[in-house]
Image (cartoon, rainbow, N blue to C red; front, side, top):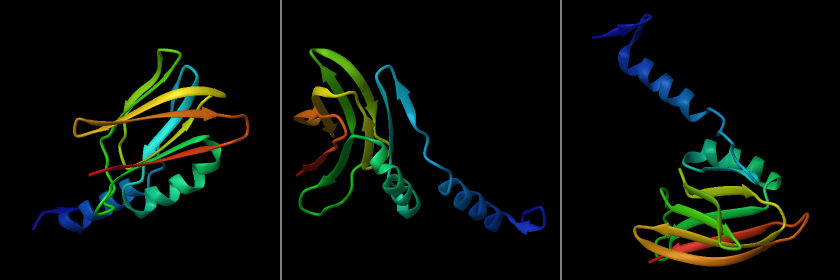
Length: 133
């Protein structure tokens, strides 16, 4: 059996995987704000919940019938015809901080887009719960 530092290799790999899951989510920046996505597993879900109030747009993606969470959604946020943010979600949850204003939000899963218009008010948050069949 392979050993690493006195531990069996399988145990060492399990410890490394558990440590990776506990890493804090990385907040990304873009010219007019910041965002974070994730929510895979209970550790990331808890981290997203702690960060929730720091962001004014919250997006959740899931299947309508099963409620299964969806990752890898392509997100495009536009304001006055200009792309503000374009990214791919790494989990079913995304938190975005945007300046006040009106935005067109497109979230696409498996080639199927959902378009929403959101108005961000000062000191107010918006939530988008998006479901695909």
